[in-house]
Image (cartoon, rainbow, N blue to C red):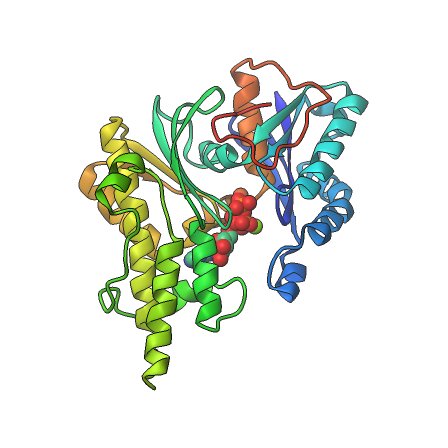
Length: 344
Ligand code: ATP
Ligand code: MG
Ligand code: FE
């Protein structure tokens, strides 16, 4: 079956067509430039951008794939989590298509989509995979027994997401928005062992209760204090070393906990997705530690890690393949959709 996927949970309008595990086209329109002007995403601005971009992006995807609307067998759309206004634009477009074409509609989970997209790149998942989804809004560890029907959330961030922590550290180091890629660039020039920043949740009771959860806000505060102390003493701030030591702490926690979870659950394949998987320090450390642990590491190319339509079409296709019942036309959008809910 040919599945049309629509993504609009944040600042990218994404439309893609997937048949089985084959991607026919992936069209994305981003309103990031507009958000950079405000130093953050304003939901109203993002919603309006989705409204303007939605139909042109659908038309562009169909045109590039040389597919007629009548050939589509099912429609998948992000039902959550995400910003309510932006989600509503995508859901409304998907509902209209579903009614107009008389084809089934599937409301699917954005975060699980970040893992599902890897099937388009590296092929069918083995029986059990671990998925680490890291972005500006999420840092979640998912045990995937069946991407369409059986996903367990092992842990997630208790405060800031990894990308968000990078953006905040970028801001305090005086770097442009979004700071993540800039901190990454500086970190590559610095010494990751220069400063020993805290790893978070290392207390005994936290270790037990939050074995697979993450917490980055304490780390961010530690970086801020360290920088302040330097400035107060009239010393220069070694930006490269601060960035490298901070990035090392984030990559250390993410990889250590993820690999521990793989070992605990006997999982031999790790999928990393979400926009933060562009991070060099995470990539390097994950590659090294997975190799040591005998874990097969799968990271899709960056364009499939940031928000896109392919991830939603991929998950929609998996859901159709599994024979899951379509969602009703009255499906809601859910800004805090649970990470274990694959379809609504
Ligand atoms: P979501 O709704 O999935 O959370 P998002 O728009 O918040 O989406 P993405 O676009 O997937 O997130 O990822 C962007 C985040 O990743 C930003 O916080 C950005 O700073 C961060 N990021 C991107 N590249 C890098 C990098 N190389 N190093 C560190 N952080 C990065
Ligand atoms: Mg984004
Ligand atoms: Fe995302």
